[in-house]
Image 1 (cartoon, chains in turn brown, orange):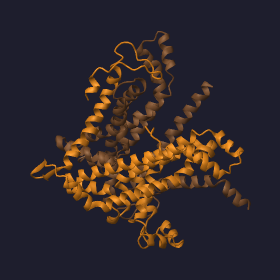
Image 2 (cartoon, rainbow over the protein chains, first blue to last red):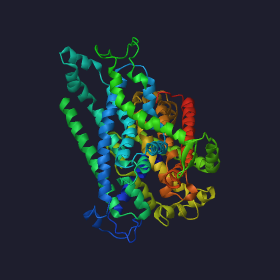
Image 3 (tube, one colour):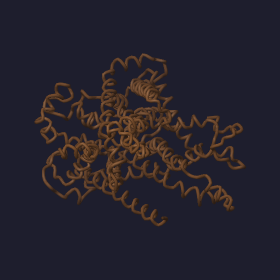
Image 4 (cartoon, rainbow over the protein chains, first blue to last red):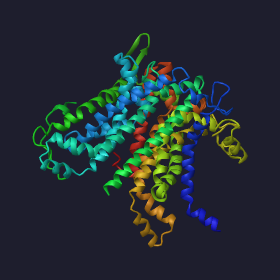
Length: 266
Length: 309
């Protein structure tokens, strides 16, 4: 019976770890299959260990080109959405004004809308305007759907901020600009950074909206989508694995830095 | 629009809000809002209006489309594609329930039982976001491959017999069946369930659990009467964040399914990008949007949490 009791006590832990395994299983498969040497065009069956793809990640035509397109779009979309979103977040938290409710719903709606609906409606707009689909239409769309997420992230941080700190700065004869730069911005920075990171991840990974509004421009997700039909090069797995490792390292490092800073304060 | 440039009315005395700066203060929020809101009006609201107009147009690509208030498109679209609508709701609903069942223990584990492993588990939940979700969805093709270990295990355990009988799988295949699509949907939207659940669980005061224990509540009773009700905001926002995108998704149904598992998203995508029948596609996406808004409103009413934003 001790085993049954142990099982009972740790049921949540076991179930949680199983879910974690379910979440990570595809990542493990992606990593393992980045060392595969597939026979046909598709990399779905294990054949033979090989380092070929790791030695030559850009060996497939268009892959690194699409990666660079995605990085550029994600960079500009992050910049645009973070800037516009931070301004909106400050307006919403710091000021009472008419139309506040309407603004709140306009921010909320893009997050509550299925992506395919937004994608299709943007396409009708662009078609009606006779816009050339490509880099710019993708960028416009990405800034649009990242905006709400940035606003939410920054809002959460600014809301928890003590307005007395700014009052104190003013009492110490700091001008409005100086107060903002030396007090407000540094306190809001983690929220802005979280929003920017989210925007980057969302933009870089977006497929549905891009698929509708890309024209002949190929982003990395579009390349992967196409490869699911034409044949999947192993290099896709290499890039997927590298992205995962870089993300984990990035988070670990930023946490270590944060920890050290906290300890420093204490 | 005009409210943005108009001078705002005198501010009502507000105890909670900080006092606006003295000069130019009244217009400041509007200047802050202007660029972002303009962007959303131009590229979110205006496209919706264009789409509404497209859905009541008739014509062809060659002769051009004209608004003829042809509402029959809606009816035609609905009668032609109702199976895909039903399927979307069923698949997304199943995936949402599965996400809740799978995600709750993990969120609970991170919030209360992980100890010093908390950050690591959190990273492992978020990090897959950074590997393209298409790559990860394609990995399910390998995992669920015909004759692979998962299919083999399900077959040995006679699970496949049951799922075949239910119509979830076909023969000794899992790929290209509803089961594969629901599995992919569940997988893809699970983090959207875990994160809000975790946020609301983490806010719960641990002393409430002790109090319940002191009052002789057994763990299950504590969970049922204390923990779960307090996590309701997380459950509501988690289910919405899972259901809405899952209902509109076409990637999973396309990569892991077959022609028998097509969802509304697939139809909209095909009509828009391949068939180029814009009115039908626009009508379909409006029906999808309306259906989701209706369901979400009813759901939020029932579950009684209004403050989601």
